[in-house]
Length: 255
Ligand SMILES: Cc1cc2nc3c(=O)[nH]c(=O)nc-3n(C[C@H](O)[C@H](O)[C@H](O)COP(=O)(O)OP(=O)(O)OC[C@H]3O[C@@H](n4cnc5c(N)ncnc54)[C@H](O)[C@@H]3O)c2cc1C
Image (cartoon, rainbow, N blue to C red):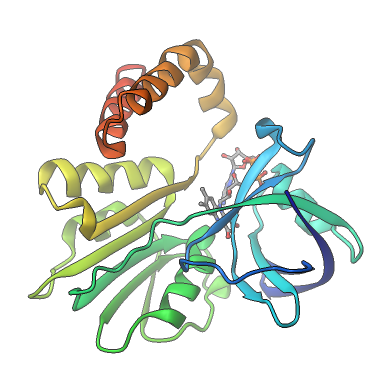
């Protein structure tokens, strides 16, 4: 476990707060969407765990930034709003999924407010010569941020952006993060309707709308769904194949 001590807070936009932590011995991340499992309750208790991207890390200064999207309620968002210098958070680092293939000539980057930290890092680090199309959904134009390159700011369904994207010629890559059901639909499109090679996309559900309701409906199916992952992993099956089975089970359960 790593402990970060809050140094300062900065408002990036009305719904985005940057918290800078002192983290002795912090190391650079490997991928631009690497993230932290932050334990807001007991360290290791996953019911109070929330996931946040490393927006920036400065090993020389032993500092790390996390950008918190502020929304109604929420353990993490409420903590971030009230946090004062000197308070601490505990986390474990985890690997992101962004992996631009060596031959990619273009990339489509799609996400909402929660994905902006990763998108910022992706754009800051992308190798020259790759043409980036970036589409970000924010409810309020005041939450737009200056980012390297051209960004299309939209309101509405991001899965439709993936579904209707006019792909440029040549090999490319698609990265998307945002509300989980929206991402699930985009995954269905790329993997099942289009059969796009897994090396060509990375899609991650970052949060779930009305998660309390969803969790109540999930509970009766939790054992079955956990067993499905455990069995798949024990059999050494491909993660995407397990995900197919998991998502089919969610659909059957109306989740
Ligand atoms: C790999 C990964 C990286 C992430 N990186 C970031 C990041 O850098 N910055 C960031 O802000 N978020 C990020 N997220 C999303 C963040 O983990 C979720 O939004 C999380 O649910 C917030 O926790 P909470 O305790 O504030 O709200 P919760 O207690 O989880 O939810 C409380 C209520 O708020 C709703 N809710 C949760 N998140 C949102 C939201 N964003 N907008 C509107 N309603 C919401 C829920 O449906 C629920 O009704 C990331 C997620 C993942 C998986």
